[in-house]
Image 1: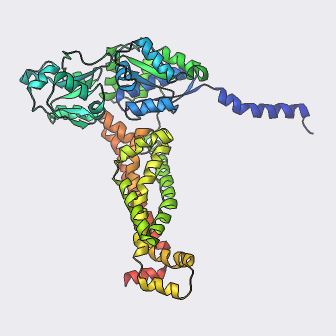
Image 2: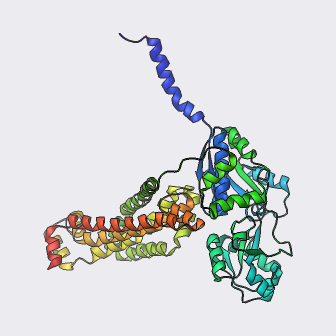
Image 3: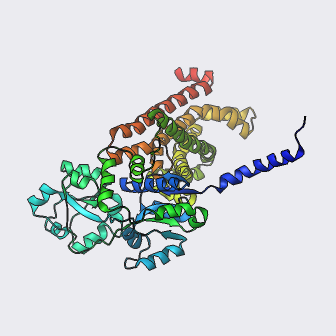
Length: 494
């Protein structure tokens, strides 16, 4: 018995409406900088949004201010936590702007901001209390009397307009600081490796390490009220999430923020658990360590595999051209060699304007780093073929393309595969930097472990990365054996 035609139409209509219904659900993406407080604030936004029925994704610890700002402008994320001093001095470059002027400048960029979340997290300079007393240092201006002091500053603070350059000019400081990770600086202070570092005033380590915050006696640092920046079109796409962000306004004081930081940094609770407890919602269930490693392995393999595949498509033909045309070949080898000298982190960041954040810019950067070993080894393998073999192939009347595919490439195969193997192993290690731009992979637990001083988290990323590098190397050696003709293998042994 056939169903009534009317029911068939109703069923088809329902199926067609399912995708639109799914698309109708409010969705938003939150980003966070690579320090604990930013990740906690990101998780607070996620929890508040989900409580309001919004599907919220959190792209955690994406690096520094400029990466988050660009991601927000480009629409790769919808919101992130920022500080008004950073916004005015570093991003908008309007240090004397009032709140109305700041909102107007943001609106011209299609952005908006909440009111203060209720606390200020200002920059400061700090020392171990015992060392400060020993030298009689209580204020930033006192540092000028001690030019031999060892100062270690977070890399971002070292370069920011509202960071070290301005502090040094305002206080006439003679020291030449070194850059290091913010979280590592506390350990360096504790060990005596450095004497002074930059602090965030709500850092949990300040009381834990018994540090003294030096008085900003010339009032250099501006007001750093915590706010959420978000895209204006979010009010249309996900009004519930905008309301969720605004519901956090004025609810978090400095003492609360320092306590939340301490629960993560010192008590080893996860940011999601801390944020959920403060919001009074059920904490998300975290996966097992094996599940996390499996997920990161898939992400890491995708980064390495896709970038290496594209590099093979481009680099082998370039190596052939370089071998066939020596003058042009020098330019090709020089260009790929130049790409290899660029700092890897800089190349990852350079790709953000072209590809946004996530896996795509990481794959593009890894592709560039894969070119040199493959191009160079393809060139070396082809030019290293004995002249008499090439002349023999030409003498028997083989056309150039046939000589390339049937004679030259098989003879050069071992050298080419050695270059591919080198590129693959390098990519496995370099891909860990992709976590700084939201690409995932083994770098994610490594960054988290460094930030939280958690050796287990660091090993959760470092050990699988080392194992994967060994497996990749072994797989290529096996593949090389299988692909090399038996006669060539016997000749190589002889």
